[in-house]
Image (cartoon, rainbow, N blue to C red):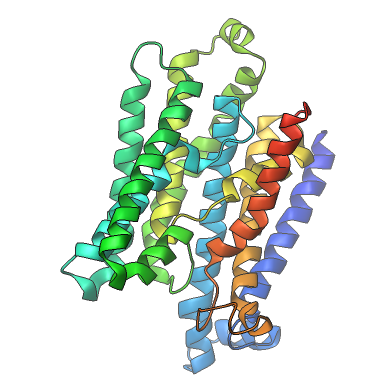
Length: 344
């Protein structure tokens, strides 16, 4: 892909992102015309219900969707490149699972229910960060390659899910909140959650994009990468660390939303081919678009469905939408791989 094609693609994706961002502000339980959105946001002296909804609910929620979607996409792109498995996504390394366990324990046993909306993301981030630290420590053991580390992450996730299931059986009164976190949702996300995720984004996104040269080298194979002067073990472990922290930042904010880190990079790979200098930033944009679109669907779909189908009073969890999209997509990739085709 030449630079002009990349600029054209980048411009199209940015325009689409702006379009979906605008739709996110317009649509919802209260539909607002675009002229009203611009008028309300540009008039700081006008205090109205519509302005409060836009400024304090929809705007931070849309920004969080862009940041968290992009972070999950970058994490998935890095993992797919380092583990050399196109089916890899952030949940594979176990970060999502431990973050969810910490959140579930906090929801169930915390004495600070009044401060739950503020404390829960912090607790989930602690769990995710501990998971990253544990996996990074394991990665330093001799003869632990990326494939084995991915397998350890999967087993780790299975064990944690078993613990969560036991908690659900014992604490049925908290089941609604726990399931909502396990599915993943942007409902109720405000500037408080934005301020928690933005440090992760500002620090980790530039670092992740700076790995493009190393990722390109790794795709040539270990031997060629070494001839280029790439330290395989340390490079892979640092990339894994950054991917884990990106996942930690996103999951601690929106919960365990699945498949964004799988679908976004696959779309990006088809658009940008294999050059990581293009693949990584486009993975960020496509994943941001995916989460924004899923959240729009989650907000507008409930009135279109029969009441018996949707037990939620206002909106679907965003993670339910990504699962409905990602589940069939994942099965398609597995089927394609089993038939001997190259998954890309």
